[in-house]
Amino acid sequence: MESTDKVVETVMVGNYVEMESEGKPNNNNDIKSKFSNLFWHGGSAYDAWFSCASNQVAQVLLTLPYSFSQLGMLSGVSFQLFYGLLGSWTAYLISILYIEYRTRKEREKVDFRNHVIQWFEVLDGLLGKHWRNVGLAFNCTFLLFGSVIQLIACASNIYYINNNLDKRTWTYIFGACCATTVFIPSFHNYRIWSFLGLLMTTYTAWYLTVASLLHGQVEGVKHSGPTKMVLYFTGATNILYTFGGHAVTVEIMHAMWKPQKFKAIYLWATLYVLTLTLPSAASVYWAFGDLLLDHSNAFSLLPKSPFRDMAVILMLIHQFITFGFACTPLYFVWEKAIGMHECKSMCKRAAARLPVVIPIWFLAIVFPFFGPINSSVGSLLVSFTVYIIPALAYMFTFKSAAARENAVEQPPKFVGRWAGSFTINIFVVVWVLIVGFGFGGWASMTNFIHQIDTFGLFTKCYQCPPPPGSPPPFLPHVGAPRPSPANITHHHHL
Image 1 (cartoon, rainbow, N blue to C red):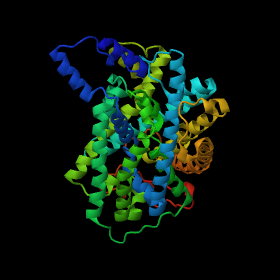
Image 2: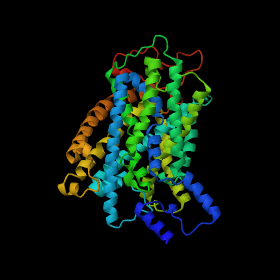
Image 3: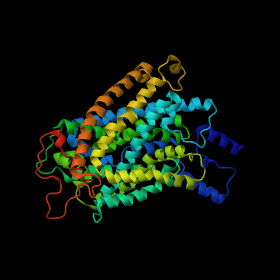
Image 4: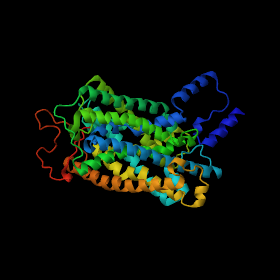
């Protein structure tokens, strides 16, 4: 009877078939299953919180002080709080749409036991194939470039510890390491990784804070930001990117035993992330001021020490985990496209997933411009994927009075029920379209194109300090005039 209940429960919550246990295990298996449950099978609200928080802030933690130097202290803090709230709101919308879709399908007796629901399927089920195609295109492109960014960041960070190899060679090495994520079946299995990932970012954030305060302000420090419009919007877009990490919200929800508990988890994760990003970015900017305009990686200004090396190593491991987070939904899409998603053999699925890693590897070698690529992805992809599309999808799903009346989840009272939530959504769409996509897209693409003009594609070692006796390392085109915003170079020492 117990076994039957377990299977029924599994069908109800849409778990992976690997999660089922038939009959009573013997003692050895019992110990093994306890160990497996502790480290491997996670589906609680705490697991979802760890996944959201550790996935939200990774390498971007190192570029936030640089964004503060572009925005100034007041705007930097304000944008973090504002986009943190905005991100939590749209993650809430995604969770409501997921529950609506799941409930409608389960009423039709659809079995999700061996199938991971994804965002594009939610859009398809609620709004039709055109919405599905747009959602799929934006989501996949964003996750693809998100994975590329993690790979570039790995190569850039290891260079601080070992510069015997150039960054391109390190990209080859880390590409091979990151390919091992094909063996992790789903977000259930990130339990121990997301927990460790959060510990790593917490250590790095507090290392940056304490090291900057102990270092004190550099001589003649200046805090002149904001000075130029192009810099201001590039910085703002990087913060938009920071709090736009919820492209994997649906997959994280689906990995929960009770997805309906997800609603406020993203907000709590964001509040914790703010305790890491605000003190670290503010203290590094306080200590180094305008120097950060030419050093987008906070590590590059802090003196070498065992603590810094530890932070670099922890961030490397965390980038490997975040690569898995960004790539796993792409693996699912690919499996569904080739008809392998419901295959029970993990080895066959892992082999089928490998072609997804190859374009990511290739793009990381073509565009090693770590700083500029962050802002470009933020303005062109994050703005639509996790802000504009969810807000519009929510309004179109519930535009009829009947749909609002039969909604599984009614909007909370404190936002003003339906009228209030629709008003907030219209504001989100207009704001992100104008400020994030419009101004942010202009600023970040101006910068990105300039990096290609300056360094070329496939550059072997992007903005590495030249050998001794060469010109100063931080000016790739020494003496070049900077007459207009279009000619501004951001020196991303990553």
